[in-house]
Length: 570
Image (cartoon, rainbow, N blue to C red):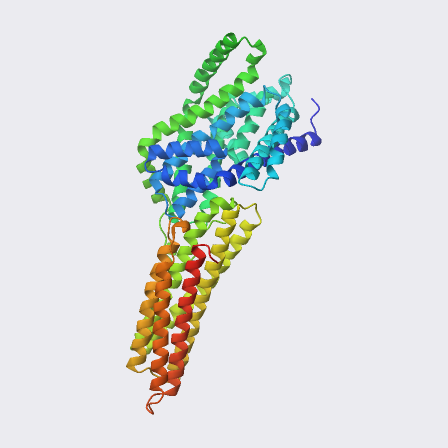
């Protein structure tokens, strides 16, 4: 067996080709059907049983359990689904990811995939040049499928067959002879491979290929498959790092589910493998007789790949059936292992996730983060009212400090949202998603500007305190009236930002409040000019007063801009 450095590089290149094809295929279908996938996940998770079905269908379509689990974590993070609902989706995703194993086992080693890849390129490439509708993204999906087939074909051909190498086989058998300890060792190997390639489907394909080429006995490969089920949870755990507590708990449920399943299957694995080997062999022989195919189909290594795919599916099905009644217990265990921290209530980015994803699946997080930004900025109006009506310098200084803190927060949030959108903009984006991202960008800019205006007002009040300048009751009443109207405008803005779909938002109420804010501003301006004729009316206080109500009216303008951006007019 001639196996050297070039052979290793060839195997790695083939694997990279396969993973790239899987990514292109998965990204293509997410762009083509991203909104539909979001709607499926949001509408079909009302109970844990529907959640299992949803997770299975979504993963079977996208061909990536990682995409499904990361999407689920982000939905929990955004408060769209509960922890119990997410548990069902995670379980279903585990079953859905076994479809990849069957595709590889049935087509990868019996069918000459390269013969099918070229026609797929012929179909997919012209579609990628059609900008109308979603043909481009479906073409991307087909091209990705073709690349995946080619990568699998090269991987199969590049791994040498060692079935005749007695030395190598003896070494593997020697490592595998220590019963449960050997199984645990290969579980760890499978986990490590999945963490490295960041794809359980790719790790599964490697394992199937090694079984087919004679590198791994069936029991060793089965142990690695169990490890790959643990390794795939790392993706969700990483995705939850920047999320809130519930997002971390959702990822932890996925980890607990797989770890518990692997723990009991390690002991039963020899019996399950023995049963499935006999069942698969009998089924294949029966199939051969029915369709009159050649006996070469019963080649031992090929039968082992079918048995391994069957083991993967059987394990995940049994694990779901066993643990589904204990979902509430899993949720409680996740809550205990991921306790709530004080930081969750502090000022920070809560929803956007910095892990890689398609723009279509990231918009829901951006919408929730933008709404969170809006709620934070709206609090500054309450701080202003407290500052205006405070009776002691201690209270005023406390409000000044809060306004400054929230202004700094608004700067940080606007930068984070802008950077996230910029990162997404580097990818292929559908026209509808591009329009929505522009809306988020404009909303963030206006919210940050509102924070700046409140901070400028607070600095004006700080100088007023230092110079011992006081407002008369009429001035304080006027500013209270204006800030109360702004409070109503903020509530409408928050309601619109939190709408399930921006397409259903009506800006009529926001425009009406803007007219009322302008009317109050005009009334205060006229009163201020009239009172300037009174010798006892403090001119400095009048100038500050004019500056403050004019600034508050500008905040009303920015609120209207935000509502217009929500409906897509900016």
